[in-house]
Image (cartoon, rainbow, N blue to C red):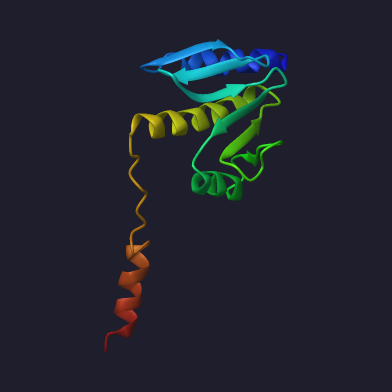
Length: 131
């Protein structure tokens, strides 16, 4: 499968979301929009570019989920290189993240319980109790 097809795979999934339209990108590839706002685009070489708030861009790059944009590395733009169809789900997740952000959908933050293993806490409490 060529990299041109990877953009079409992403577009085929993302265009099913409410309010999303897909059209040819002016520099070649696929442009994905929510109403009049760009969610992101995929170049013919399989690189997806998305504009995020700078803080979110920093988090995504730090987590290894994206790279700084190749020509605007200090902006909010991120790049994600798809090399095979195995990279499509990760690209779609980035588009989903931006789509939800643009729609004003807030994802609940994961909460980590203070007690991660109640059995260990119970064992420790038992050890501290007098016999």
